[in-house]
Amino acid sequence: MPRIMYLQSDRNRSNFISIAARAGRNDLDAGKGYIPPAVADQLAGVRRGFKSTLRVYYDARADLAGIVETHAKAIDTLRACVRHLWKDLRFQYRMGHIGFETLALMELPIKGMPGFTRYDDWLMAGARMEHHLRNQSAEHPELVTSPSLAQLSAYRVAADDAAERLSQAKARVMDARDDLDVQRDEVDRLHGYLAKLLRAAMHGTPNPALRDEMRRYGYSFRPTKTEAASQPAQAEQPEETTVENELTADAESGRPRIWTRPRRTDPGGIQSNHEATRFIEPASQSPPPEG
Image 1: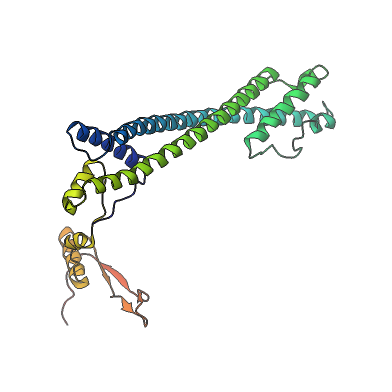
Image 2 (image 1 turned 120 degrees about the vertical axis):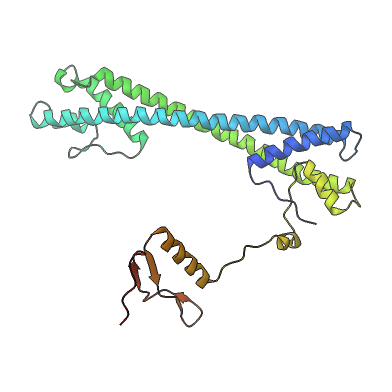
């Protein structure tokens, strides 16, 4: 008898548990005692739990995708603000309007522009810059012109909020995935347990009839070697015939013909195409005159 195929995706699990729950309830209503009523109730309960958990998981992933995009935009805005302000501060330092200690407090590179690769580094840089600029603005009002200190604060708060919501969204996805893993294990367990019940209930039934009944419950089978061998295989054309057909088709379509030297076989049975010569001859070219 062919072996039962395992469930390899959530779609397979969802289809199986739905079909099995419906078939089990229909057989009980029809008086067929393939499975006990408790198992039919369990199938229905697992079906509801799996579909609900699966929906929660994909909703959490969809929310995460939107929050990731919002977070990236907020960080990009904060990054542009920090780099712009840092450029202005360095210019004022070169003009002698502010001292080196003002720049050193912000812990940013004096030469070049900030080029952090982590989101958290940009959040920290924005927080340090806002803090020190707020302390220095009374003494040096020319430090912050455009963007203003209020804009920097607003961008930093938006980035902080986006980072917090991103962390919460990731946690929801992880929790939903853990719950879904539990439901997946339960569906896989019922997949194997129900197969044993059906085989025991229909003991002595011919294999084709048994497979048909199990297919009603959502099972699928690997074909046997006999069934696989009975399928007609596509016959391969000889290489010479294939090349001739291609040349004929090219000539009829007006495309240039490509002539290649047949592949030679090196010692050891390895085919090689080294030293192959190719040239293109237009299909419309007349044959050379005979000498």
